[in-house]
Length: 78
Image 1 (cartoon, rainbow, N blue to C red):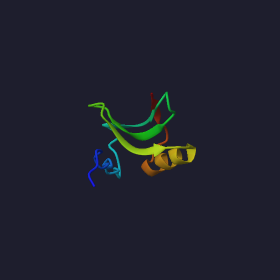
Image 2 (cartoon, one colour):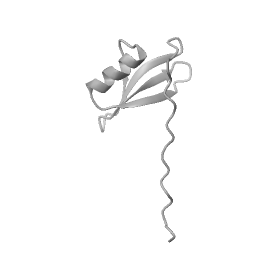
Image 3 (tube, rainbow, N blue to C red):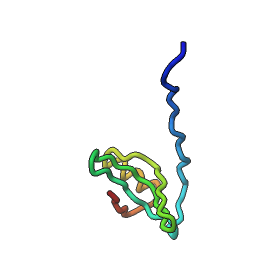
């Protein structure tokens, strides 16, 4: 049977970095003002490009992200 709608393609996940260069990358929690969604990742200080690592749904997941990468503080961007 032919379909008018193309098959859904899942977004390829970017590999999770094992470590990050503190000289060129900054840990950031991106927050949506509208939905409240929070995404943890790293922002390249030279290019401003954000590398998404994980969706943060609660405080426990935020602590897990911070422990995984040895981060004591994280800044929020809206």
